[in-house]
Image (tube, rainbow, N blue to C red):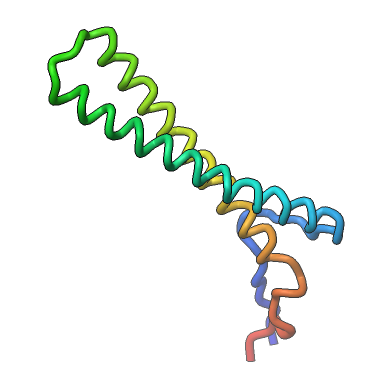
Length: 103
């Protein structure tokens, strides 16, 4: 029999119960914040489409593109953080299988 490693490849450490509660609370906050970020991205996507199709001053067009890019970055960073928090909570010992051996 050989041992098979089934842990996370992300290097996730084992959390105490207090740390798990903090991670769950942060995940809950992040979920509501991602809704706000996605709404903001939808708004700036609409404005970007308008800036590309309408005749508006160049300065306003540049600002619109800047804010659209920033909104895109905020959504992407929030999604990355959410994915890491979910992986961190799922990879805790009570979620791992009881046997880690190949037969």
